[in-house]
Each structure stands twice: as C-alpha cells, then as structure tokens.
Amino acid sequence: MSRSRSVCRRRRASSAAVGLFLLTAPGPLDAQPPSVEIALEPVASGFDRPVGIVPAGDGSGRLFVVEQSGAVRVLRAGLLLPAPLLDLSGQVSCCGERGLLGLAFHPRFPADGRLFVDYTDAAGNTRIVEYRVSAADPDRADPGSARPLLAVAQPFSNHNGGAHAVGPAGGL
Image 1: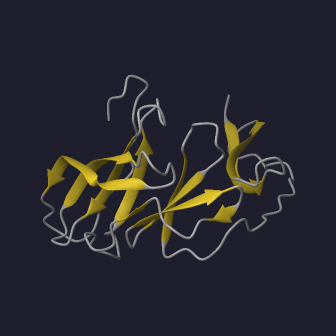
Image 2 (image 1 turned 45 degrees about the horizontal axis):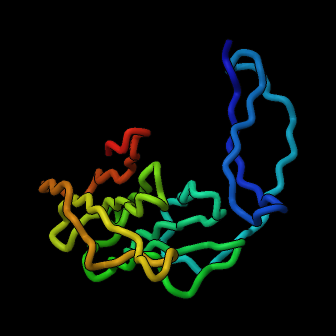
C-alpha cells in the first residue's frame, strides 16, 4: 500500500514543544491527496542558522536547537534559555555546507549524561565529539569533557553531512 506524506510542525498545548508529525493517507502516490488544513504556529525565535531540533528523550520536554554557527540552544517549556547547552562557535568552520551539523543524545540520557555532536572544524574537517552534561546544570554541557570519537579529513568544502544517531545499545 502506498502512502501520501506531509510533514508539519505544531505547538502542543501541554508542552509548548515543536513536534514533527507524519500525516498519511492510503492510496497511490499519484492520487490527489485529501485536503488537510494545517496551521503553523511560531514557538521560538532568535536562532542563528538553525539546522536541527532534537529532543533529549528524558521526559523533560526540552528541545535542543542545533545552530550551524556552533551553538546548541535549549528550549524549555517553549522558552529559549539565554545560555546554550554547548557553544563550539570558536571551533566550528561555518557556513555554506559546513558548521555544527548534528546532535544526538545517548538513549539512557540523562542518567548516562552523554551527547554527541558532528561539526566541521576550523580546517574544514569532520569531527564527531562526545560531551557530558554538567553535573551542576542539566542545561549545560561540560566543555572540558570533550572526547573526540572520529576525525575525517574533507577534501572539499561541500557535501558535509551531520546526521547521526545512537542506537538502543549505545552504539553511535
């Protein structure tokens, strides 16, 4: 069975969070999709080149916005916190197809406390680095906890990907 797909973002009244929803309708892909009214509602603003939004998956309702320029910003109850979770702007080569491009949390976060970022460094090479959340503040990562996991020399400044995920067993 084929499905017609649309992705939308909406604000949940209970958590004031941004959610992605897949609307499906049975039928062939070339069939006229049913008419669906979707309204988008701004949830937050003030970001610098946002490229991704990631939930922590810890029940807190927090969302983490990945900014290509190097910061991971925190949305708590729909409010943008003034301090980022992590600021790598001094280490990131931005922009075009470079920058801070990905974020993933360990599946046992926050008990495990690890998160992983993918970025292009000042030389334009890909880095995947593990960080730990600060013991003093769950909305901040400890910059001193950086543990490089992967470094890949990039021959060109384009076609840099950043999506990555952590599987249920904790493998990246």
